[in-house]
Image (cartoon, rainbow, N blue to C red; front, side):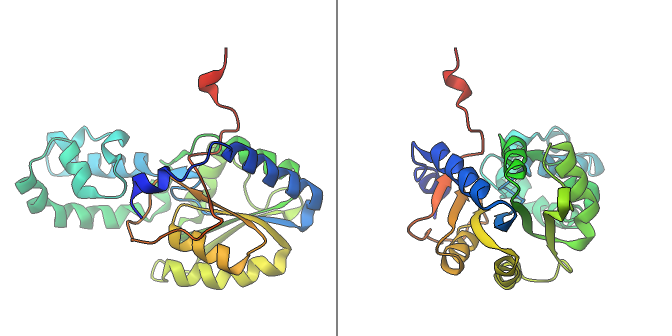
Length: 255
């Protein structure tokens, strides 16, 4: 499903749906389980992407790439598009891409670089609101264990609750190693979620993962973050709610 098509799914009452999730969580307390993906769900990865491409530019004396900023990654995870947005021509992009991709691969999935992520709008405040309900927060991510330290540091810096949290109600569930397939890992982790309590809501930017939640937990509210995704042509299942971010107030309408 194209990015623009996903964004058009966002309904005017999406904030009311998020408020309803908080109310249901409050009614269940510690029995409630809310699952959150991290990348492109709670975190904006563009600062990390831009940092890596800047460092690549510095390492290869490519001034245009040395000036890379997060806005150059507006079209998602497409490095070629970001390189073109920085000012490189198509021929240079194709020539440099294999080397740039290898440079990126060595850095992106590390604690040292994930600390550069920033929060999706309203994510910190929403996670704090979830914590006040007494519910369990589960960060269920395709990141692997080697990224735990940087991930927890970034959660804290962005104002989100960190594991283990008060009463051990905050959990960070990660792949053992980078090699595991994200889709398979998350599907297998659903059984663990079900044993923890009542899954009230699940949040993910990937249509495939949102669909898996909808299938496994039909009574839960599944929230799709209309940010970006891997680009796979996957249609969202009926009943999944798309939201642009987590801010429960529209600041553009304030006096």
